Length: 239
Ligand SMILES: C[S@@+](CC[C@H](N)C(=O)[O-])C[C@H]1O[C@@H](n2cnc3c(N)ncnc32)[C@H](O)[C@@H]1O
Image (cartoon, rainbow, N blue to C red; front, side, top):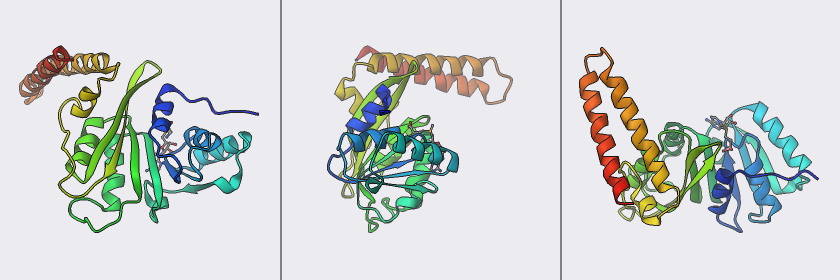
């Protein structure tokens, strides 16, 4: 029988899932993460969603090939958190999408400081933004979410950020809005130095591109990015 093979990134996501409770995977695509979770008996039930029908067909085929009992999962086509609006999940996974899109999912759901009465749909959210991870981390930790796990994982040579947040009472969350997560720095992840070095290189690259641009705001942009690079170098020195 075919079995799912998880990358280091996917394994990091699975490791943060709360066991014994239903799980939802938003933008599941191939469905490998929830498939592995079900096969290992980590969660009793999974909801797999995607906005596109093509990925869901592939996902259905995969779960069938893995021999997973269809009564253990439900596959739903839909946008963001829409298909799981009724809640009741231990964990909601949202991986492999842009951080700005993931922020939109949370915004539409409507539980934030402005609408605290809305019940969260899950006890925990495991997130792996492909871009704008800093924005997503800042947004959540400035709202009613506390970071409870953070891991860096390599996939095809790229370092991915995987983190878990849990909704908490207003005022209990600790904002984590720096260039590199304080939580991650405290955790001492073995990939942190390499991760920060990548950010430094990127900041200098953007600064250099800005320096050679004719745009009116190019000089200011170059200065900002040089300053970002220097702040990151200071963080790197303290790792
Ligand atoms: C790069 S794949 C990630 C697959 C898997 N989650 C992983 O991390 O390996 C992104 C998936 O998100 C789906 N997607 C994009 N926008 C979405 C949205 N607004 N709601 C739900 N799924 C979405 C895409 O169709 C695609 O299958």
